Length: 219
Length: 219
DNA sequence: CTTGTATTCCATCATTCTTTGGAATACTGT
DNA sequence: ACAGTATTCCAAAGAATGATGGAATACAAG
Image 1: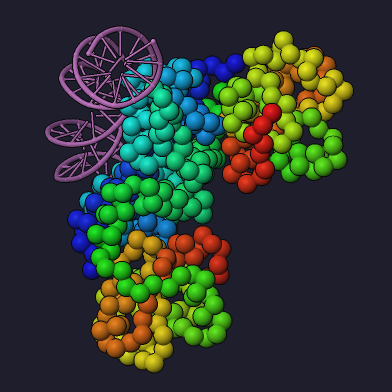
Image 2: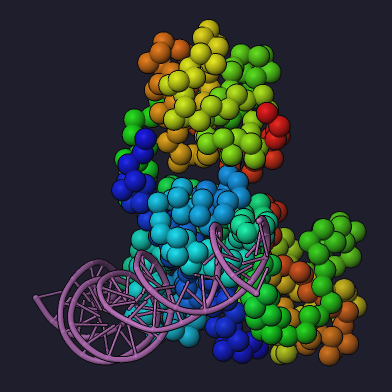
């Protein structure tokens, strides 16, 4: 009727995925990889972690089947192993943000004051009426790897110098990586300060993709 | 542009859910709780763990927002905090079973030889034609907490003595907790040995519920 | 074949988890 | 109030994890 030892072994195996998700640094890496594939060095840079530390975490994630490695020349590009992994990450993230009071607080604390937000449905409806200009404020490589159809791509840190590329009279909806990404917050603040009508998309590219809404790869 | 310390703090909070999922014993508890709420003692008994050990794990799960406690008299009944948690568990489990070769192997090893299986769609189609008798072989409390509409409930360990309650000429589809539950395997073997036409439902009540298919609570 | 670059392996130390008894707590029923 | 039951808290010991620097490996380019 089911060997208890084998049962233990099975659940220990299943727990490997949980263990992999059970570290803040690894979640940061997953968050980055959910946007686009990256090399170890780039990940270390983007996350502010040590190179060997990132490498070790990637090995853990790989062993848990969450990321895949692709060699190209001297570089090894890591990426999520599939959209189911992105979904798993999103679900774990949302569960924490919803069900753990401290997590909710930490999110609020990190994001700061919420700017005006637009829901996905609202954006879709407005787009049909040609009402919004959509602005992607993630780093250029992430924009290149896929963005909302018709979105303009201007990374937040370049935004102050490139404000004139944003139509002045349009209603602008800015988005970034996901629900817990700050880029769009900062962008909306910048745009509002320059007198524009700007709002933030409630979530980001990750959720958009997981909702199986269309994305665009070319500029 | 986002305080790195606050970012670390946020992701550490999010990781609490992962940590909670990162232990085989806790996954076993979640697996049990996904079927019906239970007291600490009953969980300890069902899982074969020590009482204090179970209590400690439940505290961890509760701190991660995955389980809820409900007091009734002297007993405290623990249950999953919501269907999103069940979905999270399922997704983590399936990710592991799909993407980690060792996990796949451990599952095969635990479940033993697969009996004939019926998919959910196949079952639904057959039910409309009145083709199948559905048999729930989980423990009685789990059957009572919810089962497939029209299913007969006979726990596996009582099945040998109650074989006559299963219509002899019908095609029987047996199910239990979920994809990784052995009860239905054993039941099918028993039924087949007694000359019946039996198959196992590919997954179990957990997946059925998550697919938002109807369940029944009364006998 | 040699040099250079990207990444992984290894060893180590500090930290955190897991399990387990025994004691403490919370509540019920009388 | 008292006795009884269910559960949690506490402390301790062994095991596992995380970060890090230096050495080793894998591959590419010349």
